[in-house]
Image 1 (cartoon, rainbow, N blue to C red):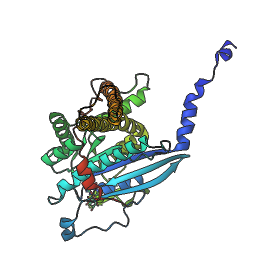
Image 2 (image 1 turned 30 degrees about the vertical axis):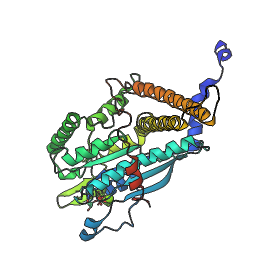
Image 3 (image 1 turned 45 degrees about the horizontal axis):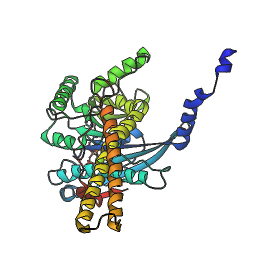
Image 4 (image 1 turned 135 degrees about the vertical axis):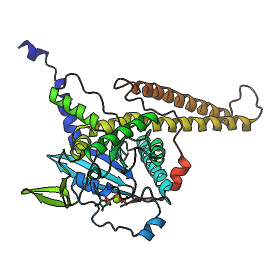
Length: 386
Ligand SMILES: Nc1nc2c(ncn2[C@@H]2O[C@H](COP(=O)(O)OP(=O)(O)OP(=O)(O)O)[C@@H](O)[C@H]2O)c(=O)[nH]1
Ligand SMILES: [Mg+2]
């Protein structure tokens, strides 16, 4: 009885939030990146079932050499038990061709910045309620199975991207490796990542009150990185079951068989367990970092304008407030406001750098480093929406 009297009603808040988010729907953007022919499109097909790339024309050799960098963006609206998800896949074909390789990763980096910039503009605009979130929440980075870890090229690309997007490394075409080779390659890749201080997506720590089964699943997931995956667009029949697989003379590699590849673990991570965390890290770390850079640039611009005004105004009599004085005061106020925001953001960034224990979330880049607006403008034209 006394329990009822104490009941105020805010315990329904989670339900309210739930209802609201379901109504609004969810948005998630996944980018795939890696050398040409590593199976990016095939994996995306296998992951999301839809035959996204059915009409894709495979360029012949001559065409491929001359091909300019083009990023393909595909969006699909999917619904499951009343929950709507707008899923966007950003594919980057042909990466790794010696001719256009640098252009490709620069365009990808610019694409990510461009989405942040768009979000920043929308957020400062009038209609802030219905912003479409096209920011890249996760980037699957494909590593070839035939190498001995990360190549110079991989390091260069990852260095360029790791502070602006959640990078999840995957070993492509894992069916070409033996169990032992997969194990060794994973160790090498992780050692390279550590040695070169590449910040890949870090799984958040598991809450201590989670049940044992969940903790075990979480532990296994963390131990699986980098995911060794197999993709296939063919459905085969194995012992009366229909499976996605690759038929070899000696047998079938089943995409969804956990003994054959980490495909299911990757899908579980992306879709069922970590989609929201990937979005949160994008918002709290990568976007915040970008926003801080933008604000710092705007405030520097205001300082420059102020000094110019002061120089141009020349000598004037005391106590007479001219238009220039008024403008100067406005600029001062603007600068002060920007500096306040910047200080707050730096505090917030510092704080988020300590989340997750052991500096797991310590991936905030220094302000004003990666932003290359000239390049973004240059590359903007090379991005195509399909
Ligand atoms: N052995 C093996 N072959 C694969 C796998 N996934 C894809 N392939 C094959 O690799 C070839 C290239 O696959 P795509 O998916 O087009 O590769 P991509 O990375 O999208 O290539 P680009 O679009 O040129 O960048 C195709 O012949 C696929 O059948 C895999 O997991 N294992
Ligand atoms: Mg492709």
